[in-house]
Length: 156
Image 1 (spheres, rainbow, N blue to C red):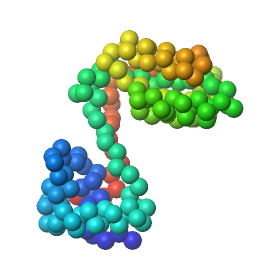
Image 2: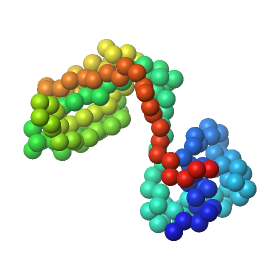
Image 3: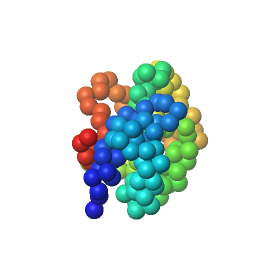
């Protein structure tokens, strides 16, 4: 069971974390507690496995990455885990998932790549393809962002 304070902190963590030297101090002040108290609750939530990690979401277009593509790969099932683990080491890949193929769509491994332009995405994928010795893939470029939100567990 979560306390009201824990819910307040989780609600704050669902928002943009301030880009300042001490973001948790600023967040703690918003709810009227000390930075130490805020961090103590975070450590406790982490210890109880209520919060397992923090992840940053960067608006890639504002960072100079104007092209992104989901790459669907057709990989022999016995190689999926090994190939996926290699792909996951590439800094240009932000997501790497295995999914079941569907009728008429035999792809089973998916990666997300970002680059300054579409040609850059193709170059990255070619490099990855050579590294894992997989040549059956297709790039699905994002054309319009219709929704992009994070999960909200509590409202602030």
